[in-house]
Amino acid sequence: MFDQTLRVYKDDLLRPLAAQLRRVSPNVITVLAMVIGMAAAGAAAQQWYWAALGLWLLNRLLDGLDGMVARVHDRQSDFGGYLDIVLDFVVYAAVPVGLYWGNQTGMNALALALLLSSFYINAASWIYLSAILEKRSVGASARGEVTTVTMPNGLVAGAETILFFCLFLLWPGALFWLFSAMTVMVLLSVGQRLVWARRNLTT
Image 1 (cartoon, helix red, strand yellow):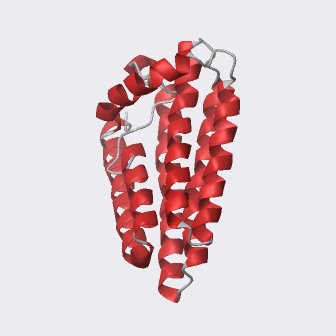
Image 2 (cartoon, rainbow, N blue to C red):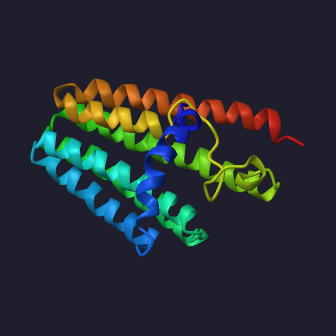
């Protein structure tokens, strides 16, 4: 929801660092981000929540840095964009699972199942819509976006995901309610896209 607004500030923050990383492959940064994200999930499973929070934030920093390095040094590739999305999804699944592993209750299990199901549905809602927009030549390049494919807006996007995961790690005792709240908001995002698609893709 706030990604487009915050992207300018994020890019201004990361551009000077990216300029110093001329010899570093963006894909190496992407893989390193995934490894650190998995470490965050492992720390959460051990109930080392402050360590997990720091690792999660470092994962997000690197996730923004890989694309900036690619753009600053003219090393963008379709494979790099694809790899970034796939490994992001690995981390998005692993951190909630790690949190559940450290807080195993029946209610948390139900909330985790619903949350991961909402992620699955959400992925279908925006990835396939992105493909249709690219097919119609109204995708990322036509919109002036810097991403590989356009990412249709929704109530929950990158910034909101970062915030929710931080809340998970700061208040693990409230996982049921936090997982449930994010599930509802993610499904509302799916509904937003369906309404938009019904209005704009019927011709």
